[in-house]
Amino acid sequence: MLFHGFGSIIEMKEVPMNRVLVIDQDAATTTRTLGLACLKRGIGVVFAGNVCEGVRLLLETVVDLVLVDVATLRLTPRELATLFERVAPRVPLVVAVRPETSLDTRVALELAGFRVLTKPVTVEELVEKVPGL
Image (cartoon, rainbow, N blue to C red; front, side, top):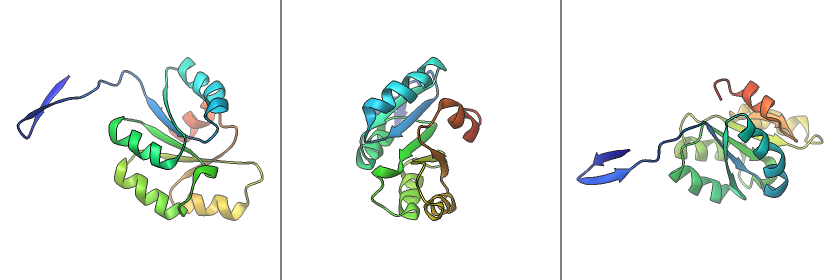
């Protein structure tokens, strides 16, 4: 598919399926579990090892959902929500937390606009949190 814009031709990739951007330092485990389960349901997955890499991928890839492991966060929840809203407006954000994560941390993430899930995250939980995925 080609689009003309400002005197140049821009090639846009057609997206055949919904895609999830997963930002997780433990990509090997996540690939085997969540990645394969998503593919079985027809949901594409793009992986990034940290937030910076995830932002770069968002600038070149269309996604329907961003799933971030809380361990990769170096910004406050509000700063991270602002960053993703500027890079990928209206894309739902889900944060995966460990079972021992405090209630205060979970509430802070939810108040910043994230949906919070406990690891290990399943495809069913993602679909439940984000209807239409």
